[in-house]
Length: 232
Image 1: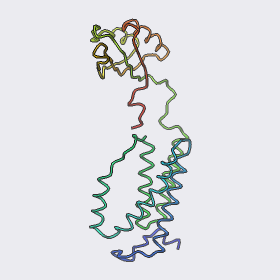
Image 2 (image 1 turned 45 degrees about the horizontal axis):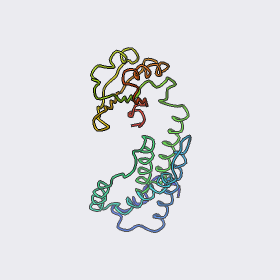
Image 3 (image 1 turned 120 degrees about the vertical axis):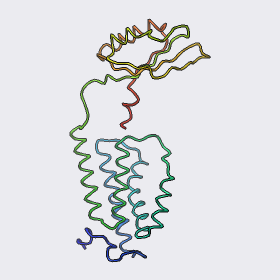
């Protein structure tokens, strides 16, 4: 039995025209177990919604059954590939870790569906422990203050925004770029969006105070750059 874990359950036939109930249940059961393991790995020092964890548990079994049904059938495989190509994710954009977990679940289901249950388990454990190790070591994290900000400034329509803040940007930032210009309030106001890199995060309030003197004390907001919020 242990030898069968590391050899395909369907290697004895060139084309699997039928699947016995025992191997089918074994593949689906192992896929569900691996999905549960993947979900547990994902929750290590990380928060997740109930629906996402349930998806991680069920996804390997779903992929496993699909692979079992098309095993050896080229026509069915092409049809399934075409069906998957029509799928679109209708949810908020996920982080890189969420996407990696989904691909891990799909890969585990794929390997399990091919009958290589032992390799599927080893694969999940290796990737899972590797992810835990990277999280434990805080790989890629930095203790430096975040200097990349998105600055939004509202100015009156009679103020020419071209170069009006350049001297302040030169004093308080190392680089800046005007990203968008938008009119609001029936065209009486402009909303400017800049991507900036502060020289010193400790002087951010002083920088904003001087900007307020230029824009007539209208609304100013500073936030992390959008490209930094999403991990991708």
